[in-house]
Image (cartoon, rainbow, N blue to C red; front, top):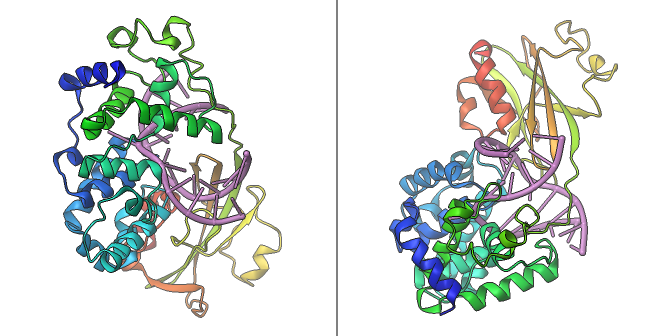
Length: 347
DNA sequence: AAAACGGGGGG
DNA sequence: CCCCCAGTTTT
């Protein structure tokens, strides 16, 4: 066992986080937790994990559930393809593995939504298999302790970190080691203001001794943010309201929204009014605007409430939703925010 | 190899 | 305002 592993496990013993998914050896629950926690903070994911385990205690229950129901429980968590993959993978397991969660790394890796990180996590946590996982914590801890300056978002960097991680792994205690390095990254070797005075590696840490903590790990890609304006037409009569489902190749695939147009700024095109003919209630300025910050874009949503005596016909795209049933549909956060404020006035 | 994919928290 | 979070899939 490497000195690094030894020190890490010594730190872990009295300092480990007590998290719900650590209390089980059930590969299904571990898988569930790992999918939920992808690019998601523990505090944000935990209530979703508890809700999913409660509603779908077994792989079979999850596989039998309709996708809509799973998406509804996922609502608000983001990266909704994770919920679709979760559903697909559960069916995969029922059909190809006879309902038993696969217990080898290559088989686990085949599951939809499971990449190298998640496969290593499940393989080690559920079955004690000797696969070192590499997540954001691992990149940070290794980059700092060993002073690795290869960019973590490069192909070469990823490969390099995976090799180092696998080398350092305590293969007889893979689960413990993998848990330990993540807890250590989350509690001590934090992205900003790491607790170097409590760190067992402080005497040898390259980042600390060479004052490179802010500089490590190295990332090269810069995020470009675009601004988008969505104009939503909240068209309703006494009992119904028009909604439609978002298509793929854009954010919020499969989620619902109101009929809309997208423009380059906050103003509605002049000809928009003609779409609604003589309707006087459509103002060219919205009554309600909400902003949503995403990683790669800023979404401005403008809502125009239009009450009609009779609604345009339903078609393959637009659905006449019953107002009272509106909460059964899955909406993006920004629509949800709007509905929280306005639903009571619309019904 | 790069871009897309949500939402929230921290500095 | 920018970065990060128990990353994976698509382009």
